[in-house]
Image (tube, rainbow, N blue to C red; front, side, top):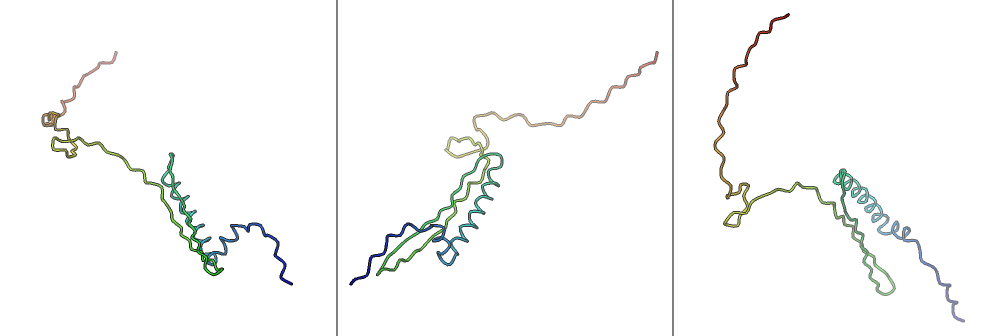
Amino acid sequence: MGAEPKPQEGPRSFATFLVDLDDGAAHSELSGELNRLVALLAERAGNGKAKGKLIFELAFEIEKGHVSVGYDVRLKEPQRKRAGDVFFVTRGHNLSRQDERQLDLPKVREVKPAEPETRTVEAQ
């Protein structure tokens, strides 16, 4: 007589799989990167908004009944807020701080303060 087929088992917990993967190293790395991402989001958002990604990728390969599982953890950090700037386009198609079409202002000269005026007030 042949062996009885085993009853169909349901899906196992992904959390258990994650803790078992690479003897817990994957779980530990993901936890650390999640913490790092949240800190970067808080720092770079200030009172505004920031976006980032924690990417966890699994690769599976089966051969002769054995499944090899590889993984990758990547962090897409939130962009730093950078102040923009304004430049003018020159006739030669370069960028310049000064608009070459604008006339120059006369040179600034030093102006000495006027002597303070003294007044006498008589009491009544």
